[in-house]
Length: 134
View 1: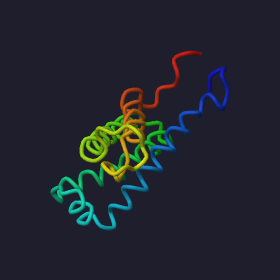
View 2: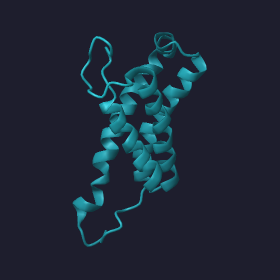
View 3: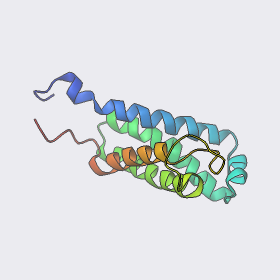
């Protein structure tokens, strides 16, 4: 622990829990019916499985990487999240920004997905690194 204290040292868990909970919720939900997800999105079943596994393993890896203090697991989990969110933005939410559904974007815009993409990118870049300022 550094001289900033317990809260400073563990604030990363706020980002970890928010992104892990979203990805585990959506990934496990897809595991129930990957074929239905593939059909709804008009994608190949293999791609649907890759998205589903990236969501589940990405969500788990963000949490597990912290508890195991394994930088590589955290970085890989963050890296798995980025293309999933880029795909969601490109296929469903582009070009609308606001998350509220509209006639043209019944699933809403990309505001939330960009936030998740950037959190995933953060973990892919910094892994388990603590803040540099002490």
